[in-house]
Length: 144
Image (cartoon, rainbow, N blue to C red; front, side, top):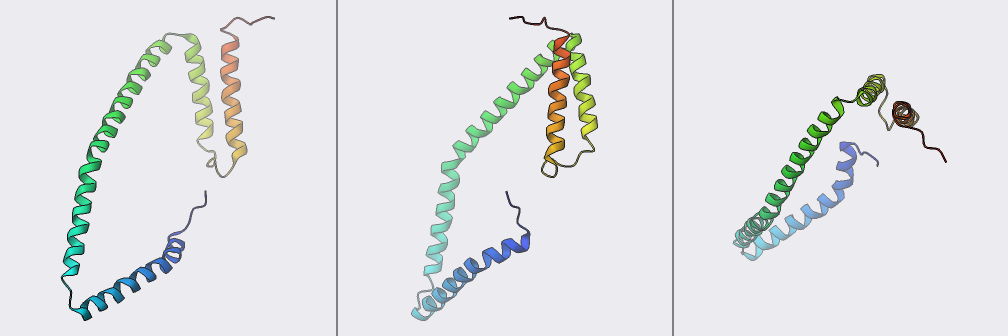
């Protein structure tokens, strides 16, 4: 995805803004010439009513979304706690955890992923190899 600088956004938005400003100014002059300035009050009331309805109708959806997010976070925390309790007692988990900690500490000085993908894939490969190495000594080998 291309990241645009703020001045680029301004340049892209400027033609649309100029057209909108022109239409508002010309409409305002014509409305003033016709002597129907009260129309701006009607526009304001319509927009305020629209905003009020938008907030009223979308509030239940926002509440449901917040409740669902809270439930998911609670489930994740409980699952994380259960997994931590299960893994703490095993020697395999401690070996895997120490291998992952070593890889994480080595990756702290790496450049961001989008700058050098090869280092990222190298770290991924290190994780797979470390976990495979730990699991080969704990699980019996399958024979054909």
